[in-house]
Structure formats: structure tokens, C-alpha cells
Length: 94
Image: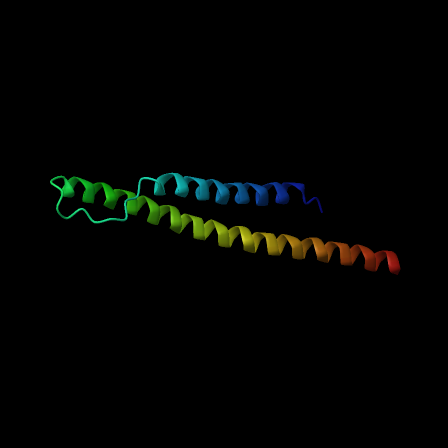
């Protein structure tokens, strides 16, 4: 069994998780954790922070999903590789 295409797919999943992590860091720089109650432009700032929060929620959701998929895929890929090596060693020993 050729594991190269499966390994490339796993690498792409890892790169996508890393890209989401970097994207989240870039979006979170626009986040403001303080409340602007007395400012005259508090409505505009609140709306902007709501948009940033929605983006972060979406990035977090997909980041968690892709991380779990990448981990499970890696475990399955490792198991398949170990099984193939075990089968080949069993055939050689017979």
C-alpha cells in the first residue's frame, strides 16, 4: 500500500489547522476586551466587536473540527502503517 497520498492529505490537514491558528491570531489583534460605556461611539465599537467575536467563533469552530479530524486521521494512518508492517513481517517469517 502506498502511503504517500494519505500522508500528503494528512499534511494538508495539519497545514490548514496551522493556517486557521494564524488567521485567528490576526483577527484577535482587532479584539478589544474593554467596555466603552461612556464613549460617544460606543454603539459603533460594540457592533465592530460583535463582528470580530463572530469571526473568532467561526474560526474556533472550524479549528476544533479540523484539529480533531487531523488527529483521528493521523492515528488511523499510523495504525494502518503499523498493521501493514506487521503483516509484511508475518509473511517474511512464514
